[in-house]
Length: 109
Length: 119
Image (cartoon, rainbow over all chains, first blue to last red):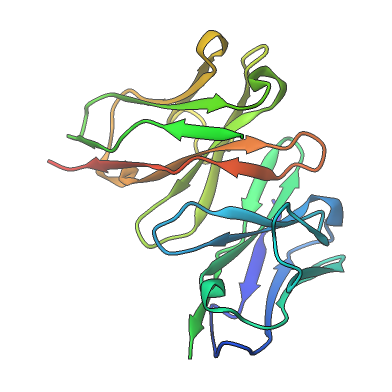
């Protein structure tokens, strides 16, 4: 079973700064099946990035995804106040099995 | 507009049964897998299982196999998550999700149903 490890657990930054969130898989995974979600306090998660690089509909272009193999990154170029939330990476594997990382909390410094 | 509308919060006692629902609208309900994701208090997301409304083909996470039952009534575009005997450890927020078929991500989420199990 593939394990996704996100780092850091908590990231403290200020609005306007750049955020870099990591998701590391326990083995090489198919980047097509790597997604990122944002969960704001008190809300359901929402899709940000799918296929490792593609932004979901309506997601601002300050969000970008990159990576391959075992290492994937979510980058937020310039933080807005509404970006402070928890972020999860997720992977699909057969038979099916969907795995989430444990999450990175992005908090205001 | 795609919507997944879930049933309301529940407070139950250990040993009781429960069935929560998720009604899809704004898309071809039988064309997409529907799944459930658990979030325990203050914790992360856990995928529980999925069902295909067209034929009720159901797949479970090994962690939830035998613990819950996922079902669907395609005539009313509604998926269900059911427990026969709740435990305190079932206390959580449960989200229904629509699965995108090709690249296997969750493109739409319900608002969540809070289940509290307490004596």
